[in-house]
Every structure is written in C-alpha cells, then in structure tokens.
Length: 319
Image 1 (tube, rainbow, N blue to C red):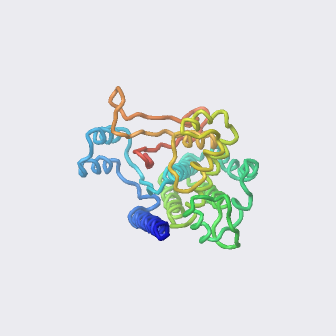
Image 2 (tube, rainbow, N blue to C red; image 1 turned 90 degrees about the vertical axis):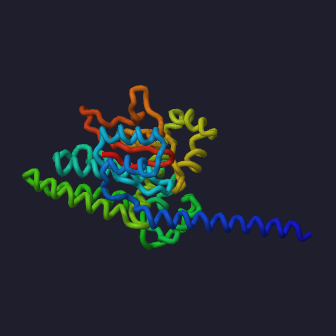
C-alpha cells in the first residue's frame, strides 16, 4: 500500500523541481534581458555569431543582413517576442510618420481601429470586463503563470489591457501634435518621443504586458472572424478548429507563435510584416529568405510595414 504514496511523492517532487527550474530560467531572463533593448548596430549580430563560434550558415546570414540593415533592437525571449516586437515597431513607425513627415492618415486609421476593437473582441467571445476593466497585478501574474486569461478575478486596482493600448496610442497622437518647423527640431522631438515610448513599454509588469496580451486577443479575433482562411494552417498544427488553436496557441501569454499568427495580426491591423528568416540556410541567390505578410509597403496606400528578424523561436526588430 506504500508504493502508490511513494510514487505520488516522487511525482510531486519532480513537479516541484521542474517548477523551480522554470522559475530560475524566467528570473534569469528577466535579470539579463530587458523587454526591449537599446538600438544596437547590426554588426552586433555578426559579432555574436563570430565570437560564439556560430555555425557558418548563421555567420553568412548575419554578414548578408549587415548589407541591408543598419540597426536592430533585441526583444526579451519570453515567448511573447513576436507580439512585443510587432507592437513596438508599429508605434515607432507611427511616431516617425507623424513627427518627421507630418502624415497622420495611417495613425488615425489605426487609432480608430484600436478604439473600436473592444466591441469587436466581445463579439468574438471575449468578456468586456476581462479586457477593459482594471485588474489587480497579482491576478495578472497568476494568469500569466497559468498561461490563461479565460477566467479572471476583477478588482479596482492597477493594470488594464484595452485601455493600456489606447493610452499608448494617445501618447503617440499627442507626440505628433506639436509640429516643429525645421528638420533638426523635428528630429529632436522624435528622439524624445521614441525615448518616452521605450520608457513606457520597458516597465517590468507594466503596459507592455497588457498591450502584448491584447495583441494576442486581436490575433485570435482575426482568426475566429475568418476561420475558413486559417483552418488549413491550423490543421497543419494538428488542431481541428480555429477556436481550439486560439485557446491553446494564441491567447496564453508565453506561447511562441508560428507564421499563421504573424499573418493574422498583419491582416487584422491592415499593416505589413516583413520577416527576415535567419535559420542558418541561405536562398538560391545567397540571401536570407524573406517572408512578407499583410499589405504594408504599398506606396499608394501608405500602410505601415514593420521588419522583424526571426531566429529559431525568437523575433527581434530590424532597421
């Protein structure tokens, strides 16, 4: 009769060890990786692979990328890197367009979409109070730990999801209102606004987490609204329907994304995403394979395009 108890004790011990190891890894990631890094020279990518004795394919890829880009920004590798990189790069593009070029059309389009997205998300099955109401930070951390936001205990304290994203867009809009007359002044204003953006989106357990999860909600809404379009890709990931895929692979914080989530978020916001796919292999012409999603880069439409670097399991931003 003692054997089952011993087996159960051993099982619990292994679970505890696994939890401890996972927490140590998460703590190390937080201690060593900011949510978003400072702007880094693209040469740092080549230096990384050269100094670490990287595979020849990655060295060649880094060498090629150094001919196309000047800078990069690293994103924390916590499973949320695509959504975080997408949002950060999108906000940067909007600030540049408003301040340097005086172009407000794209910002106004996306601002209207974001402010109207709460109604859409509730129509897709998400609870309005979960998304809009204020949420105790301990509850947020617990839900992050459990990788689910399906059931939340609401309070009247700190963070929000939808409202946090709206506030980020309000910051962008306010930054673009005071137009400088000469190029030097505009650049100075842009630099200050970009610094303020990084400060807002680099706070530990701050707006970046809420906005990142809301990016996941929008991705899931896009997929649920157009299930026939995404079902073939979902079935390729061994899921029988889109809602099941979203509940397991899109909504939970910390879940890495595949190309279908990239395509869905690009389509949802009507922007483009260019991904330089750095996996150690080169294209036939000696280039890094590049994937394009969405409608960005259309000069006639003036739509935003964000450019990301993909390495196995991780996304960063390219400039």
